[in-house]
Image (cartoon, rainbow, N blue to C red; front, side, top):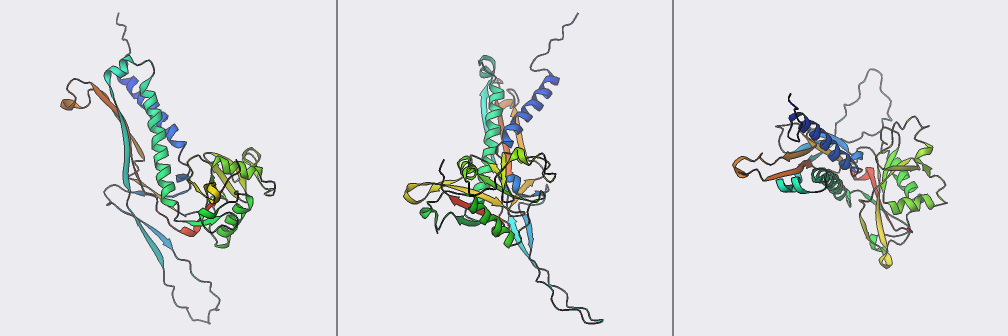
Length: 314
């Protein structure tokens, strides 16, 4: 009778392990993709060159002159702004020895996938954040005219002003009918502590009753002045008046910036087991786990997002 012992090298288990680790990497990845969730997403098809083009149509003026009987008006001249972007590659990997896998007490492979998944998400989120910072409409708290003069804690009135600014420019909200905001935990503390705001709504008080909101955004914690807020630790900080720490919060309208996926690849997980490298690893001693991704986050319209800079009382 054959026992048919299943080993880690068994083909079926390898497939199952690959699926498991794919999910592990993607789960950790999603924790940090708050900025990209608000992007206008496009795909650059395979074999289509190195650049992708975004077109931003220019709105036409109102028609106030009535039509003459039987007389057609002049045709409109179509205008649009062309924005070209070049996706760049990013990635990292961890190599390991066969002995590490055999002798380590802990499941090193699982830990590597966890760490790389988090790194991949944090990397793309940071690249996106840095691409936007300083390139959108900047708003300071209080009467400050620069970040170095900021001394006032961010409050509900600042985000009410940001929301009003976007509405005044007819910036479209997202499909859920709201603008989206990203704030540091210290800033969310200030907003929830601000008695003057009198409009903060906890997530669990509207997500189940407001039919517009089918699901919570990643990291969402509440709503204020028609802005759904996501909380992220990956927020830029700076220095204000009297060495106060400043926090860069965001309010996004629709189509404020873009994100490009090259050939629908997303983030690639790349695994090489010991023995995969042929003559480069003649004794099957080394393996590696890594990730790779293309990324670019072009600003489509600097007036469709507000970067709010203020201090915190937390």
